[in-house]
Image: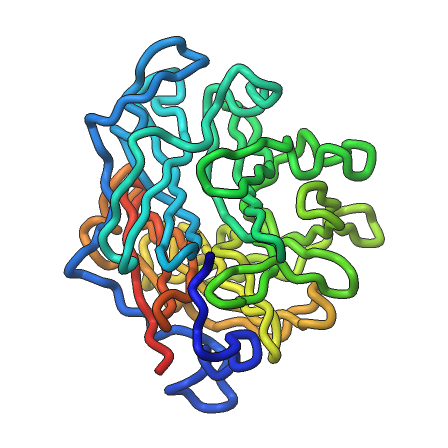
Length: 364
């Protein structure tokens, strides 16, 4: 059972995003970092998990925890987050853990991960790098669809898993495995942001023109479509290259790469899209350190999800706190989880690829 609000989120969504701002503005930038509780999750050096591939116990979240997805279910907020151990040639295999909160600020986590490399058909794609960077939506019936990155140590592949309860996940393999005669199976792919609507605090995958839509990639924001949320086909341009909505810009925060953030949200005025970016050392924003991960926002045509309508000129979110500036990778805020919870927007992000923090936007 899900929390029921007193109004229809879908029909007043533009108001929720744009209150306190002029009618001509479409962004949602007034997120406040919750310093009293941040970081909300940090590495745990004690939790053990029997790794079926290694055949022994590992301290599965000892090294780092970061890059979470978020789900509102039964009046509670759940984080599915990436955690790394400290063993192996890659100095850390990634697994997906689960934590739950009554208020979105204080979390209790499960002792064991819920998605991880195993001796299954996905081992060749997931070992020994692991399962990384989840993003989650659900369908109308309440089945959850997770896009995540499988990392074999050489190639990142965007993959899909499903669940009815957030605990037991079924792997379906690479998202592009069957598309275009396998053309993209062994190409670098990651960061699947599925277009969704907000219904009673649920992020529900939305069909546009009879298809589901997903933004993916990192050097450019590419596009894919699906009939079933499991099997995806990248759109291509007239030259046979993957089509994209937008790319990097010189002398901006997004000068080296752009990468999808949380699931994109379909509103009446457009598809609202938060994206992560990396600052170039040579042609970047001179006010930011080289390599900084900051975030921008875009608005995409709701009738044509391939057409960019608007894009913020500057970042709205950047590393500032100590735990954002120093860690496994310095100067990183990587936004990946967005939820409408208790009538506020909660934005969860990885900090310096080491911890997890939250910022809150109150639309009222």
